[in-house]
Each structure stands twice: as structure tokens, then as C-alpha cells.
Amino acid sequence: MEALKGRDLLSLADLSAEEVLFLLDLAAQLKAGKIKPNCPKILGLLFSKASTRTRVSFSAAMYHMGGQVLDLNSSVTQVGRGEPVEDTARVLDRYLDVVAIRTFEQTEVETFANYANIPVINALTDLEHPCQILADLQTVFEEFKQFSGLTLTYLGDGNNIAHSLLLGCALVGLNIRVATPVPYQPLPEIVAKAKKIAGDRTQVDIMTDPKEAVRGTHILYTDVWASMGQESSADDRVPIFMPYQINTELLSLADPAAIVLHCLPAYREKEITHKVMEGSASRIWDQAENRLHSQKALLAAVLGAG
Ligand code: CP
Ligand code: NVA
Image (cartoon, rainbow, N blue to C red; front, side, top):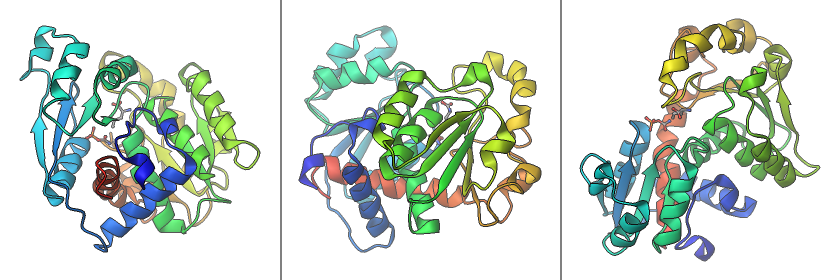
């Protein structure tokens, strides 16, 4: 799709519904081995937070397409010594073909994108994780072959994953319920944006009761209760979030064919039990695999190889 060439992905709301569906279709074709893009370009990974899946799946995707990857975490560049984002962006723009940035502030990826002409991909900020949700939607579509008429329930912290899920589900017409303790609800401006995208055809519900939220749902989804950067409050959060744990009892209230997703890394017996993670409803490992295919689709599209 020509319209995606050269584009940034800072928020899932940067994409239209048509563009998301195009990327999901491309990802499915890549996974099936129907197409093999040739893309001898250079990706820079600017990561200020830890990563297993995002780092390795972006790298493998690039290598599969004949490209190269530079791991530019802040400790090996002048960023760690305080070189401004504006300067780093204008310089890396002249060496690289695309960058993926993992950091804290959304404004950092926005500033980078303002100063660089090459495509800039949000590889997770405190506000959003759009690449994760492309893989999640691919996993849901593989299972159900449709989005309409289905409901996804996210349980836990109203964090970056919850925000991008709200936007992604609204874009593809998948009903979404987000159930969190009251002080941990997703940001009202993201909820408002999701509702605007969803219009009348898709339900977007912000809830507090986990049992009500999972009743009859088709997809249960959770994430860590304390995200990267919130480690000091992790212990205090456990009793607050425990009613939102995905366990056999909560799963039994969902649709009998319901599946369970988790973006990983997971803390067993906290946000999800070992039994559910390893049980027959879990699609967590396919979901992790789909990071590779959906990000390869994204790279191919923004680099004009898709
Ligand atoms: N889900 C996810 O983004 O995993 P990593 O933090 O390991 O990249
Ligand atoms: N919400 C989590 C997601 C990790 C992939 C975090 O930001 O740490």
C-alpha cells in the first residue's frame, strides 16, 4: 500500500481502519510464506527500556528481508550523556532508513519524528504499544476469522497496552471492555478517541467489575500490573489488582470458545495463573510469534517493500 510508505507509527490512531486491515493481511501472507519482500535497508533500535520480543522480532524481521539492524541503546550512544533528541534524530536520519524507539515519554518519539524524515516506529512508550496490538489483532483474526460480533476484555492496569488495544479494537470493529480498579483506568482522552473511532458500530466500555467484564466475552487479555518504570509500586498493587487475575474461575464466565492473550512478559499467579497460561484457551505463544510477522509487514510497508 503506497499510502504507508515513509509513514511513522507513533500511535495506533495514526492508522486508518483500512491500513490496519491491509497490514494484518500482509502479515498473514508473510506468515504463510506467500511473499518474501526484499528490503536491504537499515533499522536502528533506540531502546531505553528492556525488551525481548520487540527487539528480537524487529531484528529477525529485518534480517529475513535482507536488511541490517543497529542496536542503539542509550548506553552505547551519546544519548546516555544527554545529547538532545532533536540533534540525534537529525543525524540518525542521514544514516538509517527506519528507527524503532522504546522509551518512557510519548513526546520523545513525537519529537524524534518531527526532526527525522525517515519512518519512526513506537516500540513502546508509557502511553502506547501499537506494534503489540497489530500482533494481537492478527492472533484474534487467525482464531475467529472475523472481528465483528466479537468482544475482547482487557483486565488489569489501564496502561500502554490498554490504550493501544482501545484504539486498535475500535479501528477494526472489535467490541472492547476494559476492567480496572478505579484509580488505574485508561486515560480519558484515549477512551474518547477510541469511542470516536468506534462510532455506533463498536462498543467501548470502561468497567470496574471483572466478572461482569468477562461474561460472554470471546477474548480475555491481561498485562503486568506494574509496567517498566513502576517497579517500586509493584508489591502495593498486588492486593488491589488480585480480583482482576485471569484464572480458571474468571475464564469459566467467558464464552466457551474464548481465548486468552497476554503480551508478555508474564508474572504467573499474579495477573494470570500458570494453569490458564498453559491451558487450552491460551494463544499466548502464537501471539508472541505474530510480533515477527506483523512487524515485518509494518517494516515492509513503511519502507515501500510491501
Ligand atoms: N510484549 C513485549 O513488547 O515484549 P518485550 O518487552 O520483551 O519486547
Ligand atoms: N505494560 C508493560 C508492557 C510490556 C510489554 C510495560 O510497559 O512494561
